[in-house]
Length: 256
Image (cartoon, rainbow, N blue to C red):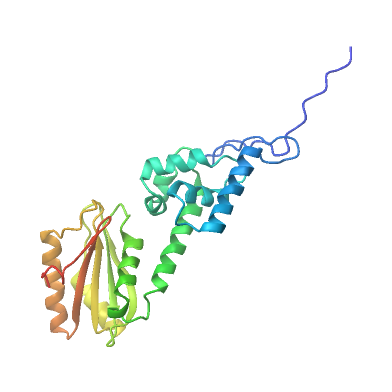
């Protein structure tokens, strides 16, 4: 009796489980993606090329990002799982790596790609405001603060230092805390202003709850910094509290 022929080995053998990405779908002979996956990817890329991102929902933009690190898989389940876990694309990108890798199908490579994308977005937003006069670029400044801080899951304080012409010369993180508290030391904020030769500053911090209403602690801390700044001949222009969808200005609210 003739010996049965062994099944051909797959072109891309499945890797041993390593706690990273979901196991790739075995490819058919020739190593090509199944037509339904290849066609979907081609259609999404064409839509982005021809119409840009505005008409694309979050899950489709996320799929486009995942194409880069999930070359031989259907990315839809992972994209949907990420959005189910975090709510929207901005929150997916802002999520810390330990939380990202808890999502089924997401391993270190995917998490790193998402964090690189977030870093590029932050760098672009920052480039629009650095060295510019704050008064004439206030909208861009607010957009930068939203991009960097609105979707964080912990409170963060940043200080924007300005020169005599109100140009932004430095943007520095002064502290990161818990979901509802972050320590800030007025002496360090003012010392750094003197080191930079700044003439004015703007405080910015986020509320992960989404509600930007200042707390009594926020108000008290701001008054301490305002008093110290005045003693040193510096101006505290504003304190912005960034929530999800809106922000509050101490200056506009009469708190400064």
